[in-house]
Amino acid sequence: MNNKTLVRLSNIIGIVSIILLVYWVFVFVSIEVFGLKVFRENMTETFYLSVVGILALMLGALIINVMFNLTRIAEKHNQDDNKTAKTTSKKLGLIFGLSFPLVFGLLFGGDYLTSKKKEKMLIASAKSIIEKNPEKTNQLLKYSFDEKWIIETDDILDLYSKTDKNFPYVSVLVSDSIDKSQTILGFRDYNGKLNDTIQPIKKDFIQQTTNDEREYLNNVFYKNLDKVKFSAHDGRYELFYPYFKNGRKIVLYFADYQQYGKLGS
Image 1: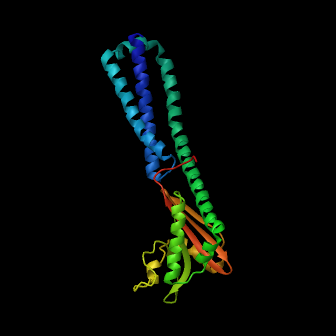
Image 2 (image 1 turned 60 degrees about the vertical axis):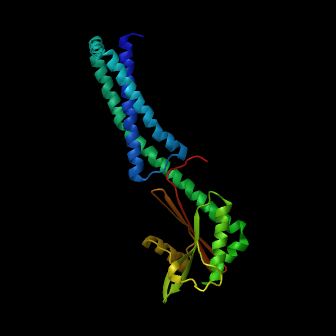
Image 3 (image 1 turned 90 degrees about the vertical axis):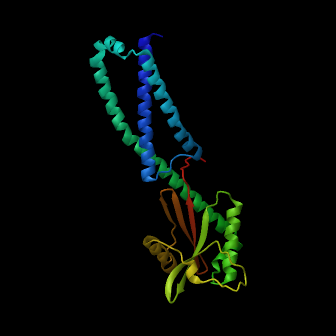
């Protein structure tokens, strides 16, 4: 392998490394700014570690150029190919510029598929609670604001979460009133014990919601809207799953958060 070939090879390696690094920065910024969840956890780690490999390639290419110092010689030998090289460079530059919208679209597509996968998983979890545990589901429907029901509800949900390692956070939402004002209460993670001297207080169980969520829940509890509500934002996934039976109504509220996306199984 002659010096001219070595210079060409090192230049190609350096240019390819720079292009890869530009793409990596673009992908990283897009993911961080828009909160996209695309990669698996191990793929994300590999993605970060790839930067080390790219920088190593760039450093190696630089060392080869410095060692042989043949850039000027290579340019003299290639003077006859300048016109062709310029035309090729323009085409490559155009392709390079148009590739960024494509990469951005692929990232958004991956984030969308991750959200749809999470939505299906949460809905399947809700159906599993209702269909496979009819006695426990009926217990959840028998809402009354007393310590016994609150403790039993917490035990039921805790049993579900310990059975399945992938089971997300879930609570039971019901409609009630405080000082003659309608409100939504959420029950989960109750630390009290039956017949405690300190009894539970309704205000401690008020479910914090956005205006859009309150409007949805009011439609469920007061207008019999039987429709799930799913939302995904910056890696946080939420599902409201209403369940009606014999005039009683509850909403299973699922919340899950992940730092990375997962397209596979």
